[in-house]
Every structure is written in C-alpha cells, then in structure tokens.
Image (cartoon, rainbow, N blue to C red; front, side, top):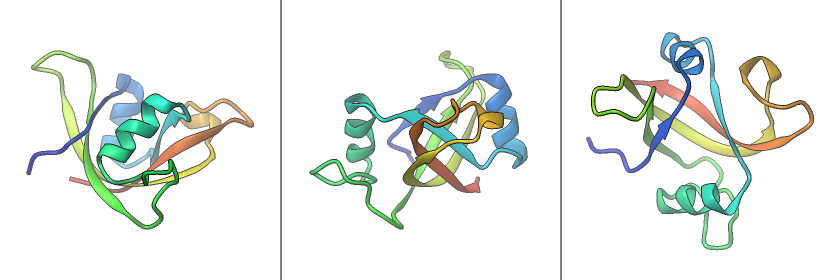
Length: 102
C-alpha cells in the first residue's frame, strides 16, 4: 500500500514510536500542515479536523533513500502535547494519534 504523506522525525521519537512507547506525533498548527492534512483527508475544506477519520502515513528517520521508516495508522485532533514527547508546555498542536504501527 502506498501512503500519501511522509513525515521526517528525529531518531529518538522514531524509536519510541516504533517500540510503541510514544503514542502521538506533533505538528504545529500552521497553513503548511493544514494543507498537507487536507490532502490526505484528515482536514476538511474549511480547515477543520475531520473527527474519527484515520489514514496510513509514513514516519521516516531522515531524508535519504535508505532512511529507516515505519508506517502507522493515525487519527488527527488538536490538543496540547506531552512535554516528555517533545511538545512545548501550554501549546496546542495538530496531534497525530498513532492508532496502529504496521
């Protein structure tokens, strides 16, 4: 199955997600990410998150062709993130809730 979105992430977070320890990945609420999440059906035409919709994305540690990757099923919502998982305290993010690691 081909995924429609590849997100580069740091090794620390990549390893934690692959092991199942980290259950969320964060992206800032900016037009850049709104557009990308709209393209894969997680955000509607008005910029609102579509609740309960899930999709398969690729998380990749680095940018090269040989970079390790993992495919994950995610749902999107907006919330404050956990500081222990890389979020700034009191800041709202697009939260990619990891439903299943493939």
